[in-house]
Length: 157
Image (cartoon, rainbow, N blue to C red; front, top):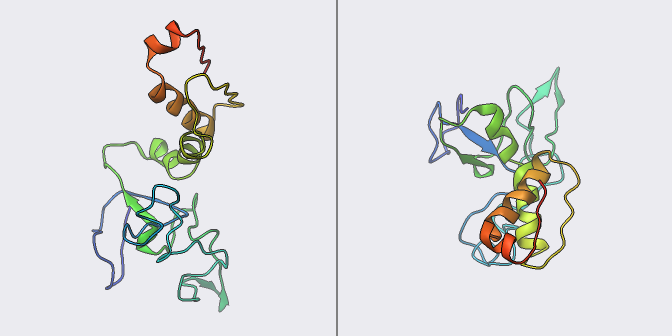
């Protein structure tokens, strides 16, 4: 939930429910408008542990603290660039919303975009954590029940 934000932040209000993302999207650059990748050119993936301007917004006793992959998830508070959060419906229970940010979207994206699972594909899902559930969700969306039954496809999730 957004507790506070800086003067240059647009589109967020105090009390908004958000989930952090490792990869931002400006929705305007060549990559964001492509169907092939979502690695934004305007807000690139940072591996330095610092904000995009090379600074840190946090310190302890004068020593700089670093972020993990642009967002410090699973922490009570975080400082994050507003381009790396997505607003969510406030009626979603927060424990359920937390898996959407990384695990579920990783499994969903891997099956849908990377593996491009199609009818007739053989898919093994090892584990039903957030990633595995994301893969299963793609399978259920891609293959309506009658198609699965008629073509002998079995999905065990």
